[in-house]
Image (cartoon, rainbow over all chains, first blue to last red; front, side, top):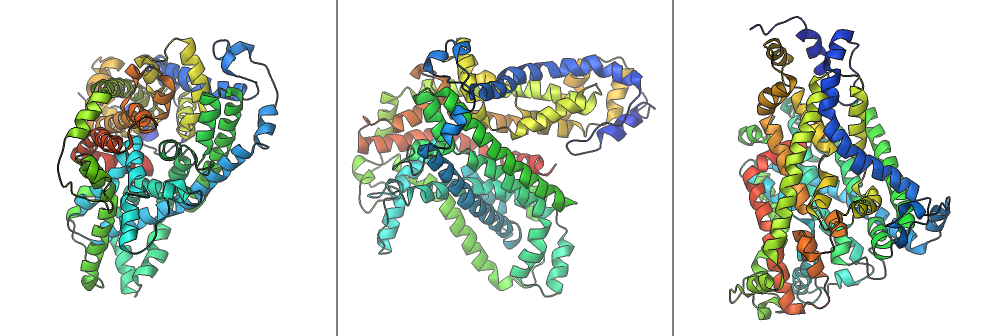
Length: 323
Length: 289
C-alpha cells in the first residue's frame, strides 16, 4: 500500500498547525461531507454529557441568580420567582460576602506570587543547581500536589496546633512564642496560604523545569561569558525567557486560589470570626447550609466574572509577550 | 526534551564549583520542609495517646502501636469508603478515556463542519470554574433521583474538557498517511480510531488515566454535596466529616485522623512515585502546547 497518496497532503498541512484557535484552511466540499457525519458521531457522546452537566448548569446558575430560589424550589424549580438584580445588589451590601471577597483577594495577592517565586526558585535549583538525585528531589517537591487535599489539610491542622503541633514546638525550641495559628484572626489566613503554597509550588516547579529545558544552554553560557552573575542571569536571561511559562503558571494558580474551598472548610471552617471565609465557602454555606440558592448563584457568578476578568487579562499579557 | 534526558546531561559550571555543597544543603532543607508534614502524619499514626499529646512533641513513637488503625476501622467503615472512591474513580476514568479520545480524534483527524466551533467550546470550558455549576447540578441530580448514587457522583465528571484538549494535541501527531492508507484498504472510521489511533497514543492515555483517576480520588466538594447517606461517602468526605465531628474524642481522635489521612494519601503517593514521569510530562505538555 502506498503511504504517499495525494489526498493526504492537505490533511497534513491543516492538522499540523499547532495551537488553539486555528481555523482549518478551506477544504474541498467532497472531503468535508465525507467526514461530516463521522465527525459529529464521534463528538456526540461528549457533547451530550457536556451539554447536560456543564452547559445547562452554567446557564441555570445565571437564571437562578435572578430568582429567590430557596429550599422549597429544589423539588419545584419552576416556582422560583424572578427578583431581577436583587441578589446582586444585596451581595454588595452583605458584610459577610464582602469579607469573603476580601479574604479571597488576600489569598490570591499573597499566595500567587509566593507560589510562583518559590516554584521558580525550586525549578532553577533542581534543574541548574544540582546534578545528582534530581529525580528524587523533584518527586519530593511535587508529591504534595498529587495528595488528597482533605487529608493534607487535616495533617496541617495538627502541624499548626498551638499546644502540641510541630511548628509551635519548633518555635519554643528557638525561644519564640508561636501564635495559635488557626485560632487567631491575624494568623489563620497566612497559615492557610502557607499550606497552599507548600502544596502548589510543585506544579509551578514542573512547568518551569520544562520551560528551562527549552532554553538553549548556549544562551546561559553566553551570559556567563559576558560576566553575568547569578542574579543578573536570573533577571536578564531566565525570567524573560520563561515569561510565557510564568504567566501560564500565574493563570492556573490564580484560578485555583480564587476557588479555594477545601483548606478553609477542613482547617478552620471559615473562622475565627469569618477571617478565613472565602467566596467559595460562603457560596457553599449560603447554598447548601441555608439553601439560599438564588443568592448563592449570584455569588458564583460574581466569582466567575472575577476569574474570567483576571484570566483574560493574564492571557492578554501572555499573548503580547510571546509575539 | 524530557526530564529524563536532562538528568543525565552534564552541564558545565564555571562559577559555581564551590557553591555546590551549599546548593545541595538548600535543596535538602527544602525537601525536608516539603516532606515534614508527611513524616509527621506517618509517624503520628503509630503513636500512643500519650505520645500524641506530649509537649514538646516526640517525632519517633516511644511505643509503636496499631491502635489508631484498629480504632479507625472500628468507628469508620473505611473499606466501604475506599470502595466508593475506587468505583467512582474507575468509572470516571474509563468514560473520560473513551469520550475524550473520541472527540479528540474528531477534532484532530476528521474535518467536519463546526469543528472549530466545537474546539472553541472545549477551550472555553477549560476556563470555567467547577463551582459555577454545583447549585443547579444539585437540583438536577436531586430531580433525577441521583443523590446518593454512583451515577450522581460520576456523571458530572464523565467527560472533561482537559481530556479532549490533551487527546487532540497528541492525536495531531499521528500521521495522516497512515489513516488514509487504512481508509483505502477499506477500514471503517471506528476501526481506525480504535485499532490504529488509540494504540499509537498510549502515552497520552496513560497521562489522562493518571490525572483523571487522581482528580476523582481527590475530589471533594461535589461528593460532599451529592451524598447524604454515609454508605455513599467517598474517602475525603468521610475523613472530613469525621475530622469536623465535635463528638470525636480529641486525643484518640487525632491519632485516628493521622491513620486515616495516611490510608488516603499512601496509595496516591505510591502510584505517583511509580509513575512520576507521566505526571511531569503531562503537566509540561498541557502547559506548553
